[in-house]
Image (cartoon, one colour):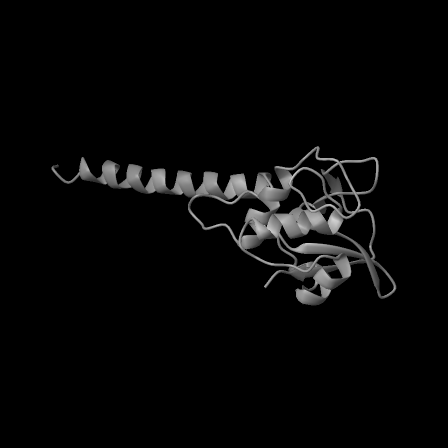
Length: 157
């Protein structure tokens, strides 16, 4: 009989660990881009958070923060905040990343919009087919659905 009280304690500890694991996994699935404390966030995930923190900052051509941005200025600023360097323009950023397929994209990867071989826009992948970006004059930094199939993906090295 003395072994019986121990069994519920072991089960409850295992149950608690399973519940924590399940909650952690559920949170990461429900909230794209969310890194849990149990796992270290990648540079891309950290850069994504930096970009998201600039929500509402106005677009300004040629601006790279901290209060105004163009598209590549936002990605440059966000990755610089986490110790990664990128060139200034969207096309140069594409050329400096490790190219990945759409099926291999991860939260924090860069999304490059192109027309033929010309890259004209960049944002940071947030999961659920959305990006954080600085769209165009008259707008501000925001989360938006990817609107085109003419995109390439790049992972910052």
